[in-house]
Image 1 (cartoon, helix red, strand yellow):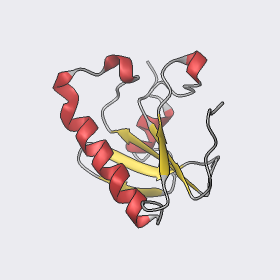
Image 2 (image 1 turned 90 degrees about the vertical axis):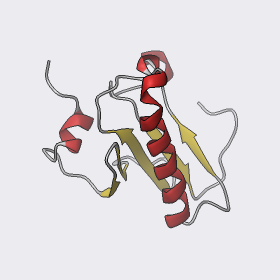
Image 3 (image 1 turned 180 degrees about the vertical axis):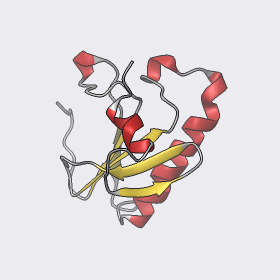
Image 4 (image 1 turned 120 degrees about the vertical axis):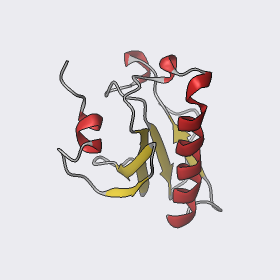
Length: 114
């Protein structure tokens, strides 16, 4: 099976604006931002979606959410507020079959989304 786009970014085969890399996670700016701050945060390990997570991968989620919190501070949105979103499956809007989280901020968010 051909590697997904996010795996290719992780392997530095596709360029992007990488903000931070940690042993288990990586973060980069979304190429089609939906807010002034729109960052993609994902595990370096290919995990298709939340459906594949189990208690053996708590370290991956811990690192991802620690990175999200640090990015919210460095991007200046920690105090004003931000949204973290993941889509699971086609009907939810998951376009790339690799678990990832959208960090969105820098504008007022409406509810309900989509």
